[in-house]
Length: 497
Image (cartoon, rainbow, N blue to C red):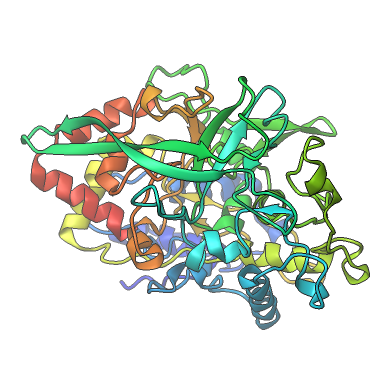
């Protein structure tokens, strides 16, 4: 029986159960393919979701709908894989997507300028366009030597009050006329202890060493730590935002009450009306929404005022007087901001609706073998394969959002996990959000290079695995102990994602 992929979960749920029932000679009661919400009991719906999101146990063939990681929203798999719109967008949504893409690619200039719709860059900035750090919607790259400029790799500052008292939250390496760049950033690579695999193969590891020179206002405060952050890929963000908070919290076990060694923790950022705000974006899940994540990047990376971070001076601090006095690009057509509400909404929709690409070769015997090893090694304990997104309210036109009620395969639990001393940040913190793995096999095709983990230190998927520590150490050790054929199969599975 051929399974049709890319249909909404409210349709595919019944087909999925039917396929299983038919394979065992059972009978499934018929029910409408698109049942109205008020006629479907919550208990029945929860049972269907639980059935379809249960971790795999049969690795002899692909699971139903596995080829479509974003459900009906899945995109194509090619060189432009990370810049495709969700596959189920309506015509008017595709138009908004393309308008947002133009804003994402736009090169901004400093104020004042005759092109008032494009000025306001800086005064301090790291790039002139969002696309500069996320080329093709993908991740940043790391320099191979000290003279090569980082692309999509920034220096995050952390101190008692959230940043450095003089330099703010981030080092900006570029500046508008009349304002000095904060510092020159360079990176060298320091060898780390190599890992010897069970078959005798020795894998060399490396880690970046950050160098800050030409600091415009003297050294950083003694209490400030500096850490590198690689720009992550942007695919599937709207689908991740549509996962229910309760579904994320289900996997959290901060005290490891079940004794399995995995103690994921939900990042709670505060509360609104007594309801906790759950972080799910960024390397440390310190942003709750796509809009907030975009706004912070616009402010710190480009110096653009926006509805959430309205300061014209971006990341300038009170100590940086020339920066604060620089001209701004606020305009009446943008509500006095440099990126007004309408443009901000278009940019949000673009970054929210970049599609996860379709899987490749998922029925290949090596890929299926690698999937079994992925589960048996314990990787799925944190890289959770499947979710069903929430039923989202209709938009102003009455249409259901494309992210609504989709079976998705991000391979992340969106929780914070202790990754060990080897991956501790400059502030000593060892917890990192589990990064989604969908699309990871297309990294080279999209970005032109491999750079994994928060600072890009891993030049291959195997290196990224070998850097795992803390809660992930047992899974890493199982991979180290694999025969070479099994290890190759595991990597083939990851490349198929």
